[in-house]
Amino acid sequence: MNQIKENNETIFENIKHLDEYGNEYWLARELMIALEYKKWDKFVNVIKNAKIACSKSNNLVDDHFPQVGKMVEIGSGAKRKQNDYKLTRYACYLIVQNANPKKENVALGQTYFAIQTRKQEIFELEYNKLSEDEKRFYQRKLTKKGNYSLNQAAKNAGVKNFDRFHNFGYKGLYNGETADDIAKRKGLRYREDILDNMGSEELAANLFRITQTESKLKRENIKTESDANKAHYTIGKNIREVIEKNGGTMPENLPTPRKSLKELEKEKRKQEKIEMK
Image (cartoon, rainbow, N blue to C red; front, side):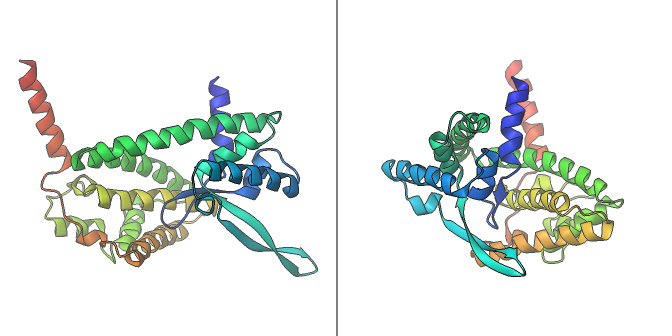
């Protein structure tokens, strides 16, 4: 059973993409291969049926099935445009529901997208109910896990000086500021964790930096410390540009919470001891 679950996640997670705003999507031609379809024409018919189901559910088809394309070589240097679709998770769910159930990966896809779509709905509902401090704890937990994975990827890319590597990411995201610069601006004590002193919005920006850098190191098979540092800086700078483009608040201008997460944890433990007496 665990092996089937791992297959579900591996097949469809491996072809998942994130756009510049952090939204996940799948490309139809990659999904076609994952679902064991060999001909695009046949898969297009599945997409058409999925679009009909989307429309009948009172959802905007263009929101879930935007058409995209890229130029591909067809020989002798000639190129032609290849049509594709940028699919949301819901679009993928509708596609696997309309695909040939006799194909083994279609059955896996039906399980995967049904479960993941429901998980996302529940997560969004529950997350929106959290207080700001609860959101901070949640985002901080994700950044800890993310930094662990990023450090593993960085090590495989040849990074030896991890403080310097992380500072390249901060410099890109914070307009040249290092971790020490951020700590001083926030008025923190020596060696106090800057991530423990960020609000949920600032933590989310850093989580995006962390996950996208790990993805870039692996995707581009980066193998030198210099290139890894450059990649981290580039990702941080790109995220900063997206925030600016959308009229968001620059991370260095976001307010520092009155209490660090460690202080909140200490208060929570103290309160629990009082209640146990």
